[in-house]
Image: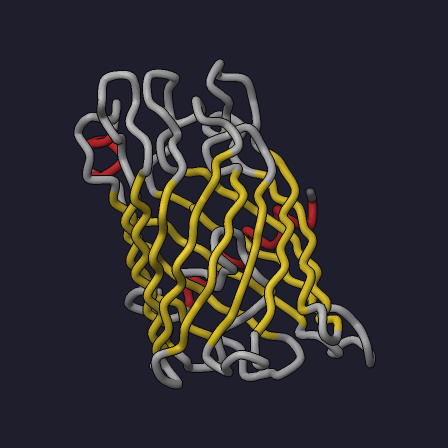
Length: 260
């Protein structure tokens, strides 16, 4: 945990000295990945999450709309880093406090990573990062910090394993009990046997808070710099959506990714 706190301080320091107008952390479908944007590369992400189930009152509840930019800031091939900023919006007045969340839509993120084989031949990738650092205390400052390792296995694909911890006052279950930690797991693979443009992934975020979910999806690259992820999110706790009066229903997601 001490190392995680040091990382958070480093990320904040980076934000204060690097002139970036806007910048979303590199992910799988839902969880962070060990991937990093290349030095001076700017990545635009536009993500939509649409709820697939209504509550007892027939209300589908809030989805989530995320637009952000990420940029790589390290010129070194063996020690990479990126920073980013997200604009998150729920846009659903049926959700308790939705207006309050949408009044503070800016969230920061950052990541430092060592790619596979950096430490020694055969070494896994290692990443330490932070995301959902909101600007409103006790409302949007989820302050999630995480560590991940990942290894690409021939034929099988890449396996990632990690752990996260966030603000225990905000990451809670439906009863208000602390649920601010959990595992991070994923499998992903480029399906070159079918097409160089096709990528498959399954990831999982543990925990009984509203972020805990199993996610399945695929990506199709329409060009060298443009791809879209199509996915489905199955949430661990259907009641842990900010308050117990709203359903944390499963969601369908589309994620447009553009690199400049």
